[in-house]
Image 1: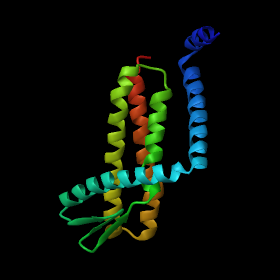
Image 2: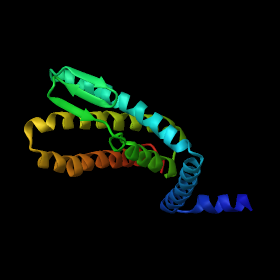
Image 3: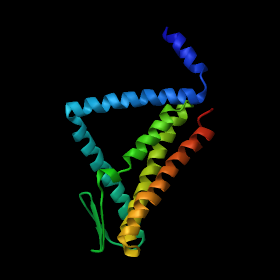
Image 4: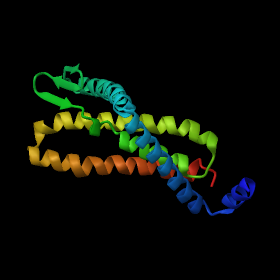
Length: 180
């Protein structure tokens, strides 16, 4: 029975397998998150992940700001520079949603498994560096623009750039490395 289902699955079009894999991944994710929240481990795991990501992103941002001549200091999830710039990393700014989306797209799309093993870490690094660049831009934006413009750039321009980059990496992998 399982062999027959697997043979039928392999005969499906790539898009159909992609959609089936996506539904299965969503169900697994939903069950996992529900169990984690019920067990109380979700908050502990998520906090540790956020702390780890904020250290990485703010450290890269600190190096980027130094390139512009600033003298940044990191304290917890807050980066300040020369008493003028300040950025606070909140969980929504960690780019987890983008990383999960990228990871999901690569994992569920049928293709060369070997290329997934090296492309996924590379893509995650690209997302982390793009996110640190985004944080650097947000640290510098208030010096040039009024708060209303900064909010527009934050909500629309930067999100568009980040989502476009993730989609572009996925398309690049599909065309060049998936083997389909």
